[in-house]
Image 1 (cartoon, protein in one colour):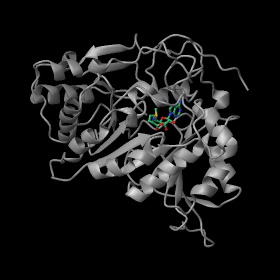
Image 2: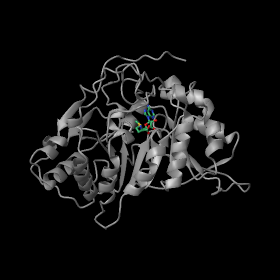
Image 3: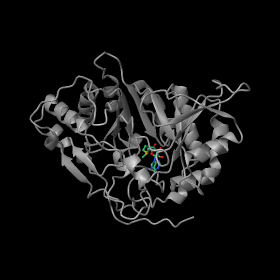
Image 4: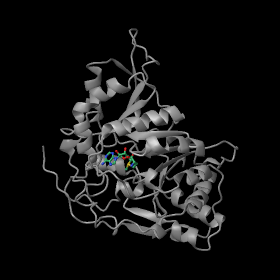
Amino acid sequence: MSERIIPLVDQRIPTLSAPAAAFAPNTRLGANGLLSDRHGRPLRDLRISVTDRCNFRCSYCMPKEVFDRDYAYLPHSALLTFEEITRTARLFVAHGVRKIRLTGGEPLLRKNLEVLIEQLAALRTPEGEPLDLTLTTNGSLLARKARALRDAGLQRVTVSLDGLDDAVFRQMNDVDFPVADVLEGIAAAQAAGLGPIKVNMVVKRGTNDQEILPMVRHFKGTGLVLRFIEYMDVGATNGWCMDEVLPSDEVIQRIRAEMPLVPLAPSAPGETAQRWGFANAQGEPDPQAGEIGVISSVTHAFCGDCNRARLSTEGRLYLCLFATQGYDLRSLIRGQASDEDILSAIGHIWQQRDDRYSELRGAAPADAPGTPTRRVEMSYIGG
Ligand code: SAM
């Protein structure tokens, strides 16, 4: 296994931010829900980061060596308020967004998050439909908060869980957090009706890949959807190297050696996971057994139908997880900009979107010499 090399610099601060006003040319762009970027991709999915803080220190995301007690997190005044988030989300909905995912950092660390959820749950599409409102969490506070989140109008949750073996899990989260508490959080979310619940496992070869089969056995037939995520070269602090990536094809092979699987069709355009069903004796998908998914952002990049935008904790709009530049919407939001001004800026930014970072880095992986590393951290932009 290759050595983990962690650059001890904060790569977040120098990340460029373009003022959104620069992307609002004189032509006013209203919202008709038909917005598309230069590759014809619509805007459907908005991920909103509500905090850059987390109580875990997973080495692939917020390694202790960098995110230590001296780390300069964003001051509270820099964070978008709930009202600012809701106003911005409403404008994104006018442009075609139908799904909102709250993330972070650890979103459940943001105080009174239920208040934001209530505000977002009240938003309606131009057709009068509610949004698909969901949240990604490490599950540590879920047992306490699941009921209140549901009551506030949250529909579903995705829980990150990197193994069932307590020692492996404690090592992965690097704060000695027990797996039993996350399982209790998942059970509370199920009881509160926050489903269908997805469970995301980041697989690092040599660290937790022995947990793949126990996880499949544990969640098969429970109604929860387990998904395996390839360890990604996101951010610039995790010391990523290709040797630690276990390709999704190998994950599927390992599962298939014990349980027959059949490929399933995507359930929605732009879906990140490739879905697999458990096969019955006739080789058909068995609905009772459920499904698993793999997210192959390293080995099978999927920019072609990406319809996701990301709003950072401090109101910068990012068009890709691997972007180096965000667009400063907060200065518009806190300035004198009208809804129409902001709508127009978002529209212009999306129309000019040309990126295919994942596909391009497939041709030149992040550990290739000369590859730029000024990418934003996942904990800042949201997963
Ligand atoms: N704290 C929340 C959580 O744990 O789900 C939300 C934020 S977290 C950044 C979102 C997701 O990104 C988690 O499932 C996490 O495992 C995943 N993630 C973070 N860094 C990653 C990396 N380098 N490669 C793949 N997935 C990563």
